[in-house]
Image (tube, rainbow, N blue to C red):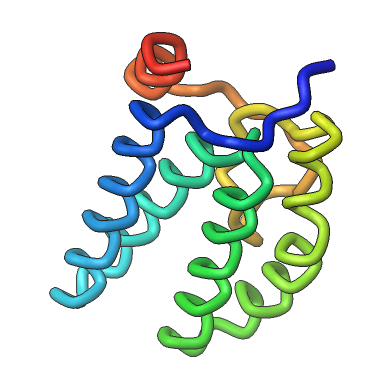
Length: 121
C-alpha cells in the first residue's frame, strides 16, 4: 500500500486544468461538460487526500448550484470520507466520484487519463 500525500507537480497541472475547464463549461451553462471534467479531475486527484477532498467539495457545490438534491446528499459522505480513504490508500480506482455511481466501485480509467497518470507520477 502506497500512501500519497502530495500530488506530483506535473500531474497537478492536469488536475488544475480539468478544474479550470469544468468551471468554464459551468459558466457557459454546459453542465454536462462541466460535470465530465469534474469527474476527470476526481480520477486524477483520487489518490491524493487534499485533491480528492477538493473535487468532492466542488461536486457538492455543483449540486447546490444546479439544485440537484441527489448529488448534494451523495457528496456529503464522500466529502467526509474521501480524503481519509486516499490517505490510507483504500480508494476504488477510476471511480468518477458522483452520486450516480456507488462510492466503493472501481471503474475502468480511459486510456488518455491512464497515460496522463502513468507519465506524470
